Image (cartoon, rainbow, N blue to C red; front, side, top):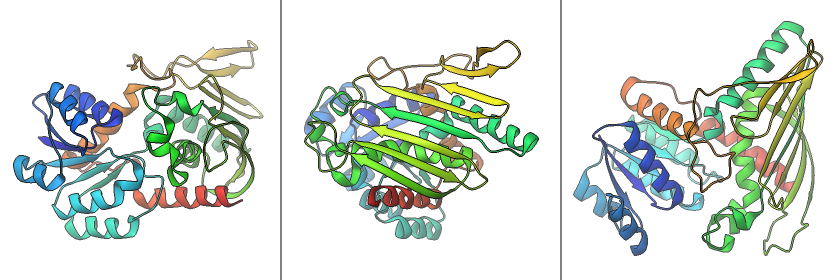
Length: 329
């Protein structure tokens, strides 16, 4: 198999590295408008081109991954689908071209796969399972508290936050966190029926959007959560707590920090959802490589075995609508 990666920045290189590690004989080629990135890709053994038409003509790939800034995805996806390529795309954050590209993929009869990496985390799937079992057994609702934050200039310490997509109001840092975490919360606790919002700007960051949100989410079925999202916290934080009468779970964002409370012993008991996990040391410890591998495995399974993808553009439309509601409150 040969895959084309459009956008050879940090995520494009990560996808290339992981995909090649998963599949013996996989060939990766790339596209990037930046000459410097094309040169860097060449050093990694990836032949890269300045444009998609040039790459398609020269390489004739079997599938494509879109790893560019979210605001550019719609047009790139359309071009790849028109060329008949099954297409994997990273987080979009905006719904530009959603209806058109879904219709085009359906008409062509080819997969259009959307990333939602948190759905592939062992921790989020454990939380989902425990909540479902608790509700089935007791019929009682649960509550959760969830704080996610990290100082925006630390996201990509090798470049200014003004120079990549989080500097844009439509694809800003807070919006990206919502885009990453709302899908798994929706999946684990049910569709969101109502929201209330408090938002502020509490930093000196040069941004045209608030940097701190407190959101209360009421889910269908009775679950309710408080979600605190910021791009100000000096230490990267992902602190989650879920509780009900007979259930208490704790998670600090990495595989070593998932716990359940044992009422008999009165202690928090660690839960191991990974026999082993891979972590890229350049990123915060709440970034786990296994989830990216599992997501790519799902994409390859969709292509070769008819597997169902865990996420879709139709589901994501509901999340983008929810984000728009939160931002307009």
